[in-house]
Image (tube, rainbow, N blue to C red; front, side, top):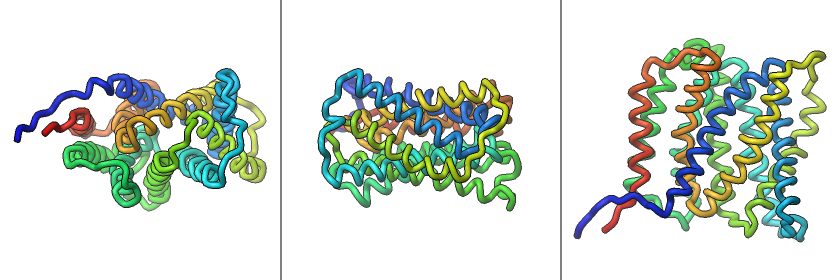
Length: 305
């Protein structure tokens, strides 16, 4: 029996989309930091979801997606509710709240824990996606690199084990669980029209946010124009456009493949945070980066027997 490794050329377009998604999501932490200058976390999460849903609604209208207005099953709407809550409303709010006290570099780095969570949930809940030893090794290698980064004191505004900051660290831990659960729901629901599914999910997430926005959200008297631009960017790109890419990758490549984007997100969040926000780069960044990129590289190859 001969074993070799070869690059899956048929996935080149998927890897390109994954890279674009990594840049877009990596830049979202920079945008959140700027948006928080004028807005509260509930504003940031709610407004980006509403703008994102309008973006997808315009795309559906432009493409004349008739399936958008067709009758759906109860299971379909339950999946939309789950994705709207777990992939949008809840994690967006958790991360925006945490980023009021933690650096964008640290919050972005925490996203690399998602692959291990997706792997675990996929193994426990899914029967249609094979989990190979090679892919497990690549993902664990990337998570090891991320763990080193998270353990660095320079990754936060204060010591990561400070009592004052612990609650916000836990928010950063809870958000990846939400994202991973949302990815599994998308994978298991298998909607026929992923654009319509994404649009419906974001519209439902918008409805979820409205009561909290009205009750807890107090808009500032004076707006910073940079914050407004940041909110618009968050809605159109990391929420709207990125959602289209996300569901497409899950449809054709699976939740585990999509989870690899979370090895790229920390790298880009660190780059944007250090060079544009002048935040402190974790002192173990180089070692961690090597481990993360090596994990991604290993997952790009398919074992042939």
